[in-house]
Image (cartoon, rainbow, N blue to C red; front, top):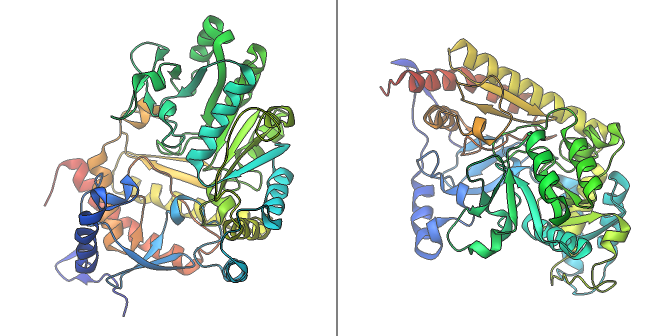
Length: 457
């Protein structure tokens, strides 16, 4: 039987810890064959401590771990599962695709149909399918450099674009500095043509382009950052970036790997660009467009995309690009992602985020809740009124988040195991799942309050 948290008579917040022996055993086993025991770093719980949960299944809004514990899932595989886990129609179409074969190494119908669906929803004229968001941004930057004949790439501190060497960079001192490598293994030469600016800072952008506009191949930004917590662009900021790039002959690359088809039917562009009348030169997509499978894409203006091989001289290729199973999952997900799906996810996210804020306020915990569409996050940042950039995001009290995270986990709610990540809901988050989250919030808020006060008892 699945394990559910139980209260102790000694304290309203005292609970019988969920069993984790199975996860602990698998984590130890994984350490013998995998660095850190995981295949993506945040899964290791290093930021929050404790035992990472090894999952065996997902159904709707719920996850089940190897110890039989059930959790309401508020990460949804870090965004892709807009419809929830194991959606029956997605499962059925994928099963049919698998029965026809898992990979052809040739063109297939589903990859054309998925490309058509992306083009229909966004301002891009052509797309190229790849297998990961990292691959999409890497390829977009190569294409931008090839198209413009320039080398310099501009990014923002706190924006993550995958583990591309030239983008694993952090800001140095000063308004606009040459980047330095943000991880061992990235040569200085790989980032010497990357410049990092503070996010939402128009003056920094204007100064850099005034000084070096003729050298800049592209400016790449998350359409609405979610990798330092949710830090939306200030009103008109993305339009300003598009116009600035256009004036200087650089390409504007909007990274919608996270927000694409998640925050609206048209992604973040549907919330700003479609209303303001501008479009990026290139866009990158992932997550939702793969329906839980490894699929991603980059696309943009036809004249820019026409530089790609075999039509043009900029080389890019991939054995599993356009995989028929992954494209079937993505195509089915997008076709099912109708207006009523977004309305449901928006309402569910609004309910949970408001309740989180109310519980923390009642417990006296300094915090901010920030939104972009149905993506949101909680910042335990007592020194700022609004988080607008990485400096503000980094001012968080991560010890308070840690206490909050574990209190939610013990009550069967799986939050992102990092204070610098977005929370995600899905169309499968029904009244039962949401009610479970709301019931868990007051106790977690009290745990956060104790951490804020320095009481570890």
